[in-house]
Length: 122
Image (cartoon, rainbow, N blue to C red):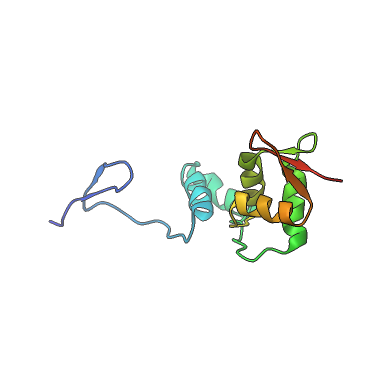
C-alpha cells in the first residue's frame, strides 16, 4: 500500500486511487481543465473544442495594448486600479496595474486624483 497524500489546497486525504488527469502550467489552464472535468463525460470532447484556450501571458505588452486596457477600465473617464487590474488580466497582461497607471501619469495620459483613482485625459 502506498503513502497517503493530502491536497495542499483543501486538505482532503487522497489514497492510492488518486489519478492525475491533467497537468497545466497556469491558473487559466487549470480553470478550463476543472470546468471540463466537472462536465458529463459525453460532453467533454465537444466542450474542450468550444471552451476558449488559456489566455497567453504577455509580460512585455506594447503601449497600445496597455492603453487599450486603460480605456476598457475607464468608466466616465475615471479609472480604479482594481478595474484596470481586471482589464490587464483579461488581456493576459502580467504587469501591475499601479505601474501601468503611474507610467500613464508620467506620459500625460492620466492624472492621479486624491481619492486614489485616475482621470483619463482626452
